[in-house]
Amino acid sequence: MMRASLIVTLVSVLFGFLLFEVYLRAQGAEPTTVVSNPHFSGTNWSRPDAEFAWTNQEGTFLALEEGQAPMSFLENGARRTYTNGSEPENAPVLLLAGGSYMQGYGIKDENVVGAVLAERFPEFAVRNFGTGGYGTVQSGLRILREIDGTHDAPPVAIIYGFIGHHLARNVATSDWISSLVTSDGSVLIPPYLVEDGEGGVAVEEARTLGLWPLETWSAAISALKRRVAPHWVSGTPMGQARRLTVLYLKKLQRKAADLGIPFVVAIFRTGTLDESYTLGIEEDLASVGVDVIDCRFEGLQTNPTAYQVGGNGHPIPSVHEHWAGCMGEWLHENTAALR
Image 1 (cartoon, rainbow, N blue to C red):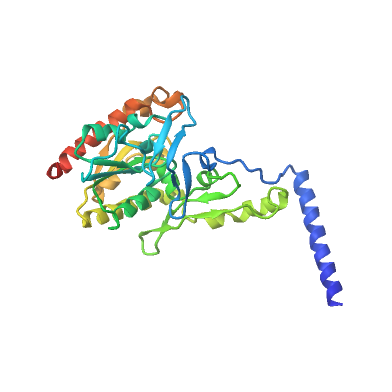
Image 2 (image 1 turned 90 degrees about the vertical axis):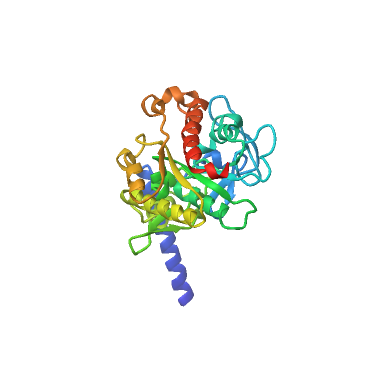
């Protein structure tokens, strides 16, 4: 009797599910179609990382922008800075961190800001950990990994390159997360900022959201996942991104200061995305004691197509030259005792 009742229940549930599937299809709903991000194909420049969600992988890869510039990365995940040899031995390390602007996506190794700085400051070993898609959180975690005391040559100065879109990345907005799809349909959820319950900031760890069973076949399952998945990703509103980012950078600055390491935020670009959240952030950072330098290139702000690869890609070499000059002034003022 119990077995028969169970069979009836299962058949009823299945029939109801099929009716719901038919209804959704009639309304134009479709199962999930996997549209992967080519940067996470497994054969491009990135590889999975448990802490960062992804990182640069060793090798040389062609940029997916006009000119297909070759981009080389070292075993430790840094962009190749010394194209004619290795970094100077026993030299003080200058650490660079940031997203694709610092990484130098779309241009050759020798034109990236890190390589320009290495040429202008041969007394330093420049290590550029800029990584495409990184915001402040992933950049900060990379910085913390490099100063955790386990490396033979911790940095003597740190420069983090900031752009406006880092704010959206820092709180894992749904628009941003939806673009981080791997070739198997999984969604990469990078570490992001949350309230710590005491008015401060904490970091939510990275994780991966895989495809549900039959998700690519069923409109009903796809609809259910879209309904509940946002609640698993982030409870941090975009309106809090700026405040939490400032607090997080203050924590990084304090950590670096405790170790006697000069730390600065280089503003590369603001006002192009999430404008109301980014303009004036340098004043917010300065007000809490975070050192800031304004490295914005005017042409990139006012006439971006003239200064981007192919007109719509990443900044061209002349912009990196400008950034190196801006960052170089800060280095002259803050690292004189090291030279």
